[in-house]
Length: 480
Image (tube, rainbow, N blue to C red; front, side, top):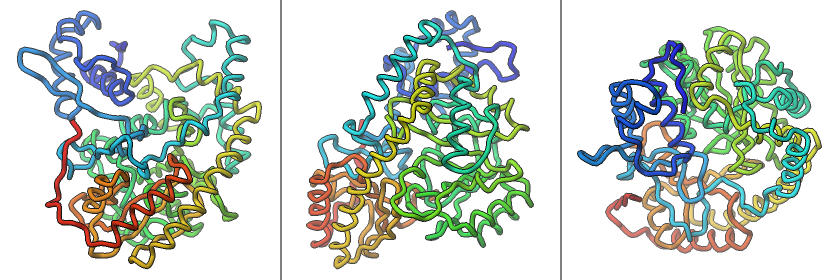
């Protein structure tokens, strides 16, 4: 951890942001934070700075203090690491985290299985970088990222998504979640209104709410956000930005029509707000329809495009990027620097080599074939269950299916019943901006399961749907 004492950002905020980032990235090996005196001495600041930072961390529910003992990290997990926990907060649960048994059939995780990791190809890239650059590979790159990688990403965006962006407008991040955190830190002032799809990715809601934003949900339809309501809310709330996922939206898996993309851009230009477009699954498309991002239609620099490579590459290789409008470029880079100085230079160099050699294209072709087979199987199995009143809209891409349950079945009750039968699903309620609403949706992911597990998991789901759900009294158990 390092502090910039010349910055206009208060020192206690810098300490808070640094520790928060380390917690979210699971970088802290000890459960207990350093004592106030030890950390103040290490950083060369007074005790009050550390006291205020720790108080803020406790207010934001990242740590807790024990009188006479010290300050301890709460069991908080990175929203993108879903090996046994579902993303974000679920306020209906005692702890705010959705517990998922490790030994269950995992329809909750959208991370790939390790057998799909391109180990050999990436190892070649790592070795080549070490042979070529030696110790230089471990120096800090530029704050905005290793320049050759930014060049490669600029070319990647043009070839794959048909939009041009200068390398100077690209910021390399440690995954997509960090991109959201940095944008929130830069753009949001306490009390600002932010519009989001409803339901949406709960990790984004957590990032925005941590900066004091008022989050307003706009309902999703099968072809994208409800434009009529969006227009009404824009006029009413004058949002700082709207946050959307145009292709295989999480959790609904819906994709936007061309008409809705155009309407959103027109609104952004007329009312002068940014559009944060989050993308991590556009590459997993099983159909022939056009899935180009909204950014490819943006001619006035209103769209901030975030992309993570983690989900369909290797989750542990924290590589993502953000494309930035020139007028906020400097502020975003400053926010990145105060978060973690810069993302791993070695991994950036290796991933640049990986892109340049064409390995990425081969990897995408391979995982598309594998996931297409899983997608065909899970939709075939789910079609059998329609006799029990379930329904879904085939997304023809992505890693999930958004399943509508019969009206009489609550998603939390079904989640509890599945958990008792060693099946992990995600209740739709956790994705809505208002968790108190009734929701009869569940999200099923086929990313982390085998073909046999898909069949067995749907059979378990069928056996539960065949019989009325037992009244468990809505028993929510903490994971700690």
